[in-house]
Image (cartoon, rainbow, N blue to C red; front, side, top):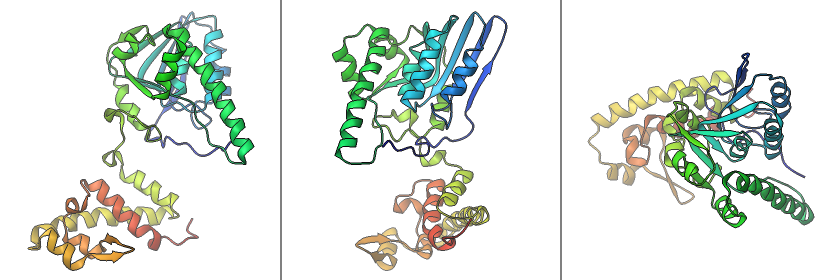
Length: 315
């Protein structure tokens, strides 16, 4: 059986799916993942089929999502009688890159990215279940490759190789490879591509990688709530964490100890791994122990505190 889990992209901030209808031109925003977590196929098709404008602009910034939802959206776009223009504003990855191929014209912002790769899924069961799923993935791979072939004019062997390699393309590269028809002006939406956690992919460009610096106090609170803390407990831990960071700086300035002395004298041994206590971290500078920024220090402190600060039955 196929496993459905929560969103793998861990959206940060506000994303959007909306339709702006006008008499002669309509704009549809797909600034979310493709699934019932974000852009739901059923809702999309229902909205899309109501559009009567002569031209439809699809504005896309999406990490992908459900293959079958994406295929449904692709077919709705391709079958619509209006002229359709897809604009890759920030990111068109995975099934989102397939969706934009359905448009009559694809324009990619010069600072955007497009990614193609082999489909994958999560299953649980016996050997027969896995064999069936592998056969299904092979078929899905073939249909997706055919879509890329039709758009780019490439041979199947070349397209399959690009998919297997998880190929990330800049606008110029996508244009040169035949996946888009034109390069548009730069878009502020490229930065919004980092609102998605893309760590499930193997070859994410550095510009799109989400780092600890992107995390806010509110996100840390969410992480703690997911770990079992109540809302009040999470807020308290985050608040204490920020105060502790300030103490770390003061302690560092006043201490005469070197990092080596701290490690030699006060580092505890736990299962063969060196672990610092709260008091030891207050003496040592965060960066001396692999923590390079305040947010990372807060996360490390929150991870230590959460198990003891939050009872298992917290709500």
